[in-house]
Length: 150
Image (cartoon, rainbow, N blue to C red; front, side, top):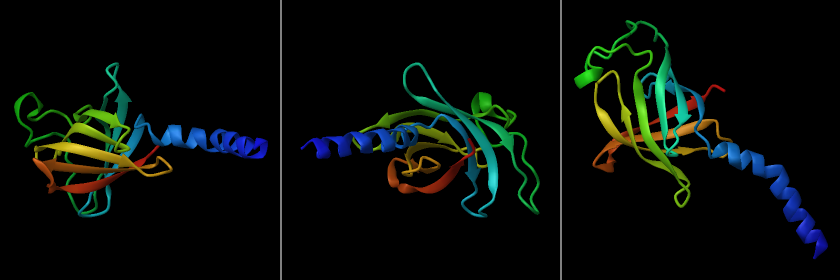
């Protein structure tokens, strides 16, 4: 019995930090264009006092043979023609322990100007965020992967 307890405690000690890291979105993420496979931007995600997560673009990457976009031409309202650097494109995501996912968020696509409902999930290592943006139901949307920079 003592050996079993020791094994459980050892497993918790060894794997606990990995699990805790995997459940956190805070950090810098490289967004990957789902059509070209190239990095489009870097987004800094922070955790707000209410427990939700938000993110702003901190860097824009050029895609070969395409002009670099620096403003959100197709965004609406106060974000219309706003610079991409500092643009809040990720908001309201909350950790849902039951689904082991981040839900109830919104994502703005700065190329189309569209705002989508969002749901995300981290891989076991916590370095890839699979993000699903959708309208109404998750069946009507698209999935992208973001790679953790730090």
